[in-house]
Amino acid sequence: MKLYSWNVNGIRAAAKKGFLEWLDSINGDVICLQETKAHADQLSKDILEDHGYHTIWHSAEKRGYSSVATFCKEKPLYEQIGLGIDRFDREGRVIITEHENFLLYNIYFPNGQRDQERLDYKMEFYEELLEILNEQVESGNNVVVAGDWNTAHKEIDLARPKDNVKNSGFLPEERAMLDKYVENGYVDTFRLFHREPDRYSWWTYRMGARERNVGWRIDYFWINESFVENVIDADIHDDVMGSDHCPVSLEVK
Image (cartoon, rainbow, N blue to C red):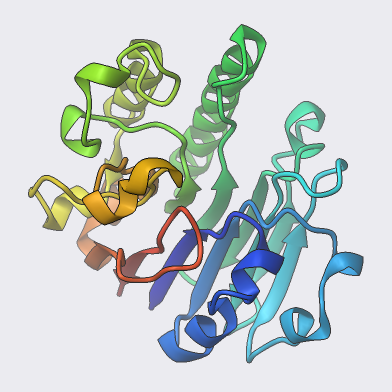
């Protein structure tokens, strides 16, 4: 089963840059999209066409903001819009789908760059989500958390770590929160297969950052530890254009 996750930075813009051709070419079983920035009534019929997928959309109350979508080749056993926490769900950040052997969380995590209030909101989101995930794992469920986590975990995960220690996305408290996920038994699947540096999933549009590979790895598939034996591969597809992020993938038995 092949899963992809991609922050498309606006589904309508991405559709003009080859997104639909990419979707038709990859033959993925599940596609998780973040930052679609659209309500259904804003989408063209080319995008709304199912392309062989059962589609689920969760849009923010604010139009043109945040929002996620999950495309599944087979209809999930169960689907849920949001975490069930109103202050997060208003921003269209989460879709949960149940598959044969795991629960999939497609998440656009908050960005903490604007001010302290938004940083606090981001940290609260991490905490609340961890509690929910732990409850599921303790109940015997496997969990896969896909999406734009908006935090680079280790120095290897961004090109300029020393320049960014005071910037949201690489603050000590944000990185410590990912350490907490590790302590609670969650695994960053990409690092199961790739220990090399210079592998990133996001680049600013400024100063030719992508061409120079001055990027950050902030898009992940994390899973509970006992599900690791089911993982076949995980990768980053930095040759795919169309957004300031590129897709990441996970293959599971």
